[in-house]
Image (cartoon, rainbow, N blue to C red; front, side):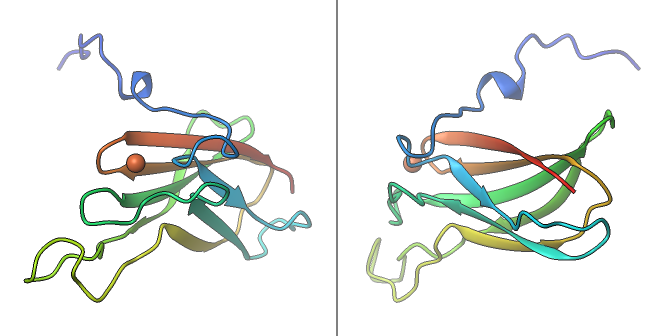
Amino acid sequence: MGVCECKSKLCEYVKTEDFKKEKHVPVIDFPHDIQAGEPFTVTVEVGKEIPHPNTTEHHIQWIELHYKPDGDQYSYLLGRTSFDSHGASVEGPNTGPAHTSPHACFKVSIMGPGTFTALEQCNIHGIWEYSTPVKV
Ligand SMILES: [Fe+2]
């Protein structure tokens, strides 16, 4: 068993930007009065300020929400949502009756302050991330 010697890391390809300027950035919203161990809802939305296309050819495939407690060396995957309908049908692209929008809700509880990180993948523009501190 050895250590991977690959010089290429996924983090080198994950992009981020100001969500008010870039449609791919996942925006994280949650209440500001969080109590340790009490459930609350975190929403993650792509295209909140600038809508992202939602077509058969160009769409958001999934969103993940991670939590890294302050002082912990590990992060925890809180949830992952896939978006699987983008207008495809037997008639062809963009002729179908259903679309799923890149908006996910996660009901969670945490025991202390840390950082929420959301990741999302566009089918043609790769993986984007956004992080924000969370106080408890
Ligand atoms: Fe895109």
